Length: 306
Image 1 (tube, rainbow, N blue to C red):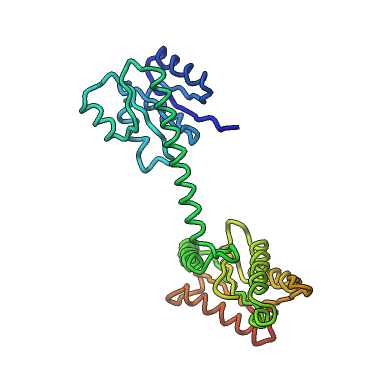
Image 2 (image 1 turned 180 degrees about the horizontal axis):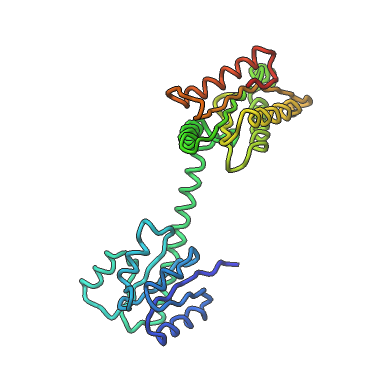
């Protein structure tokens, strides 16, 4: 079923407003009726995609309404059709410069109005498609193509941002650095395709264990992963690291007629603005987590060091 377009009619004359509303409802449009620009802004919702507005109205006229609808402070795109008896060239220019997308001279021909609304629908659909494409491109730009986790660039940006927020709010941020043990042996023995499959499975485990919308799981590089855990103390970070380590140790990835097992080592460090006085907190936190990771490797691998 095709989604119905919602059209807002802004007209102070109740008879004219009802005539247009009836016309649109017969064509299966959703209709919102308002008597002036001020009421239109009060009743505006994300569902309203097309606005048909009279120019001359009390309280807030169509020209000022158009300016506000096209303000960068107002979220969402709306196609605005100005309706007026003003037919001079300078009037049309003034309306278009205020942000109107189209212009109809009274008396309104109903077939013409419907045709212009249909044209507006095409523009709205194109704008939505462009916005979706932009959002998809932005999401892909911050994701690792192999694992689907955040990439190193996004990790660096988020870690700096989370530490700034922690300093403002006097809260902690935990960092986990996770590295697969003997991963080169897996690539050398089973091939890079199996190695890639191992990385994807490990990434899925990490993504499953972290808090969605709060923690930031990332592929740090090669076979190394990282997790930013805002608002997490050392005990909580160790618990998260141990859950991930245990699940990875249980992992078995098919490789022909064999099953490949893998383990990982984890280094954990916590940023606490109440106890940290060092400059460059991002670098200091990463170095601290890396040192713990080295300790875990040195102590025999497949363990958490904090």
